[in-house]
Length: 332
Image (cartoon, rainbow, N blue to C red; front, side, top):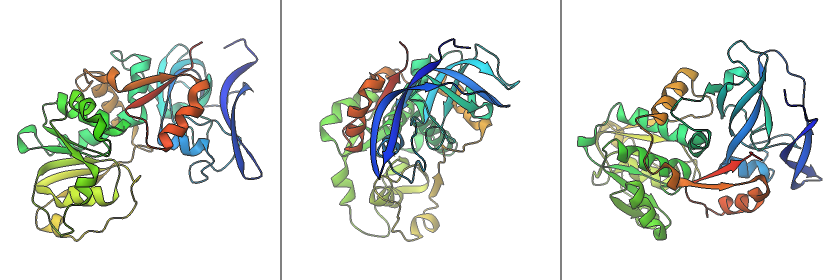
């Protein structure tokens, strides 16, 4: 157990409907049965964290609160037989950083059932370059590659400069797939090409496609991270027996579609739920991310910051001005 009386945490506080952030000294809590105390080495900044940090009650209901839906670190105290002191573990999603204090802190208390042992071939920093975004990308790739092979044709990835999108492009490219990347940031074409994209499609160009029930089939499959018109057009432009995964709704939660892509082309739409993904599948995806799926360009998707730099980066991510992954170091 750490001998210090307090630890540092990035706290969000509410006063009469106004939200402020600061770094606070927080006291340790007594552990209950089934709980781990983890010394956090790294976290990462996600869009959901930015929403929590700015008082979005759809993400976090009660304040004060510590955001951070991702964390990796070392177990320093345990009330569970599943882990022992010194184990290195990853914690992503579930309720972490939403209504349970999250990874923007030097220590977290979490149920042992939320933790995955860090794979041997994965560093702590690499685990957070992946984080929930990597887990989501990995889940999407797993479902897609079960049904679509590289020789079947091009896979399209939307929101390609974002965390999930960039990692999806990298993983698919490593697995031998031809990837087309959809982005609203034309200036990042070189970045996407370096990650492995063979074709760059501008978001405005793709959104402006004809509003027909079906479009010319272009893709064997797709990984969509944004929803809305982009997802509609991916589905309508997917070839017979193609597969599209859906994991995001930043553009819209609504779909304006006919059933034609599904009953005339046999297209499959698969939803991806990273928050409550079963543990057996989480462990499978993490092992793949640590080994045969680990992109050679993984470090190229990362920017490392400290707790003191969170406010500025939260503002950027809310404006859509961050590419790739932002890792938060908690190491002194």
